Length: 561
Picture 1 (cartoon, rainbow, N blue to C red):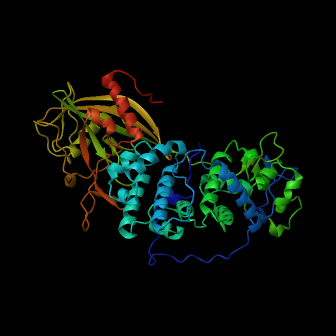
Picture 2 (picture 1 turned 30 degrees about the vertical axis):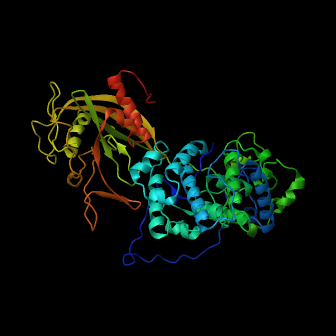
Picture 3 (picture 1 turned 90 degrees about the vertical axis):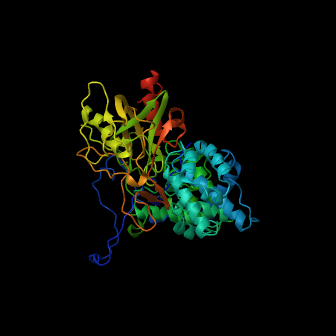
């Protein structure tokens, strides 16, 4: 099943944040004279088209929806949705009940909010069991607000994009503390007041829970409306998004059941108007779909629904100046429906190498493993991982890899480990590390396990795994107190991923990580062998753990390919 894709960066897992310079430092930009955009003239072949493209000359009115057409489409959508709304068994999908009081509607808003956040970049079938477990643990927004990030991440484990869980927690806490425990009943306030909620999510929640006539535009609706309007312009342009939002608004405007209209658009885009294999014969909007008509899939008698698509040549002042020529494959006589929306080249994922140290301390049959908690913001926020040196140069030598555990553990343990490997030279001491103690732990083994590839939406991570075994000392090696962790400095091409001390402020611990309204000290902990898999670790760390286990179990349990 297709995933729910947010249309805007404010709801993205890896959104960029920008700050404008202060007014005192701003240079006044020269005022540019506004000019009307005119069609771009390109070199054309003998048939009047760009080579290997379809001509794409049409009136700008092709991308608008009149009130009468919107009414026809809305009725068709609702009739279709009435027959399919229960097919996928979504527990959060319930009919709007006008008899609900303010508390009942706010509860519905909470349920829809949780489902919408879970559905971002995740398939419906995957979300359903997670949603059910979540609502059992946190049946109301107050239950969620009273929880903590470890409990929340534990329920979210395996769902991916973990910052979504942190945003739900921080949002719930804000609602309970500042808004009397109720999510706002209108999209404008919801978007401005609740962290992690953008225009799409605010529209979905408020239309479904509060019956507010506001539009939605996720990836599925974007594709659907791009085809309905035969809009072939860059999806990243503001002008493109403005057209699509206006179309979505036209369809939901004056709807008696705004939530059903929006859910119908989402469901239609997800299950019928698919990216590669749209089922136009089952689509209730096919008779008025511009892409469907331009593909020659309807009779001439049906063209009266969209008169702007008539073959009459429009006045040049009325031409659309936004759409680009449509790529033409060999043998195609007309542009297929899948020509829309316009394809954009995806940004290439950056590749990174991390050195992951699966650190074990053992004594008298006991086996303990060291886990370090990640900061509360960014990638894999608040989850635990094995001590890791991130984004290392691929030219790193084997000797440099094996030196890393000494420097890294010297910052995490109160007693820096010494080299106890047979016939091994002592690692170069780190002047920032705590002093060595003869009674402290010794590193008796460093063994490479292999590489694991783990792909994020924007990064291809290669985890190079090595098993580091500690012995000695009077017990499980003591960890440096949170407020005493030494800041890490880059060492040439090697960067050690250990918690760094931050500047203090009022009411804030020296090394607190503050993100999404949650302040949590960076911590490390020893975990027994049997408890590692139950810890709050992500999928990539689980792959690392499974690979490392092959070194002592002697059985290949996971393929690194």
